[in-house]
Length: 313
Image (cartoon, rainbow, N blue to C red; front, side):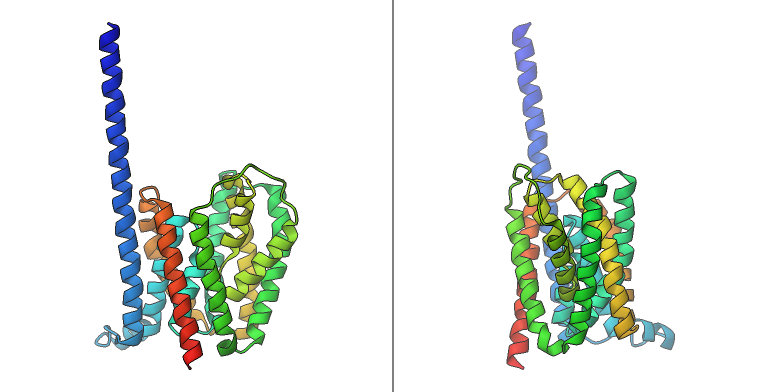
């Protein structure tokens, strides 16, 4: 009897091991597929920007005016950024701003468009976290005021400086964010230590998020999780606070710039809506570490391209 039981347990363990191996292979395949899709879409974006023509020129005038080349570019940017964010839970602003700067959009319009679109996405995300009990109220309260102050200051500074002059510096910041994402892929969660100076962290996070078009999550969340805070409550609290940071930033940009960025906002929202259900399907089927490395490298590459182009002008 014991021999039969032993054989049975060994067989069950072997089956579970095989299932685990199959699951690993499946996740590896999905990671490779998604990585290839993201790389190809960014390559398509470059080809479309530099060599492409509007493929909808034979449509009726109303449809043609809507499907302009600019709108299509921003739809593609929104799609790629949402796929990245949906798969990794971060890097929407950083990736979309990097792509738009490479496409020739000024830093202030890129950041304004991203933050206006993020009002909708972060609002939905924040409410979802609140509904599911993922928000630490004390942490949220400590982040929201300095975060919004930083966002307002960042938006004001960005709109007060010539876009061409600040573009290389914004790209340098995004390059750093790309390296931070790669570093985060190798981070190990530490034992929890008391987090001090939350206000300065949120202030800096809000400021660089407005100036660079993204970075609130990678700066604030990664720092807090790196200190050993519970990822569930950290991400939930930071995401809810991000809604208010986005509202503050978008409000300042709208007051100063007006509605020049409506094409960017519309394109990002359309692309994001198309990508959201696809991202939800693949989110549990990929390995985040290799994808974070690939995304980080792509952001670094896009940022270097913008910096080199600005230097050669």
